[in-house]
Length: 211
Image (cartoon, rainbow, N blue to C red; front, side, top):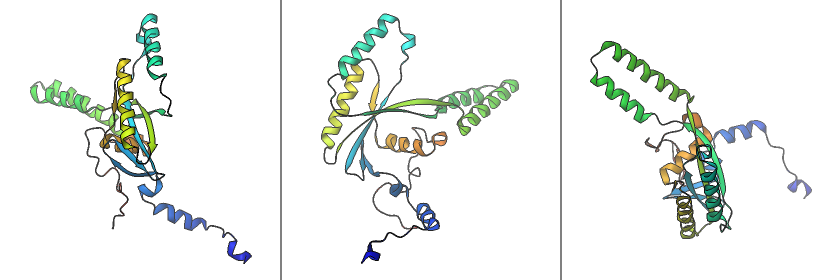
């Protein structure tokens, strides 16, 4: 009987093989993402707000004091837990590339064409290597499973509170949440907002895909 309860020592090779066979869903706590809600395996649901940064250094001492007081007043009644974090991601250069490409198509000057081509190549190389990044800021709130209405109510309320402080915040939709999850695995090569998110996470729902 004692041998039945004896714990066998795990084989390192078996553990490595098992880890390599894990899907993205099995490795993380994510079960599914629907609408603006992330459903976790631990029976919790999450919502995310992306917060546009501001620089207090650009404000006068009086403006800074007003901003701080306003923020403290708006969030003093918030009793539930939340998490705030920031993460780096590549800068979206799509608009700049479109502008330079437009100039390239309009010019007939060979020297200007050469300069524009060199500029576009340089910018694209920075984007591919992840050397040019920006900090993005998010607020996470959560509720037990089944509290979807309460979670979205809290998210909209927080969105309005930031707006009252003249800070832009928006509730993340499904595509933004998926891209945010990708940032944790590879921030230098994360997809931008206007990219196709379909291949980013191979298995998002609880169903297992057959090879």
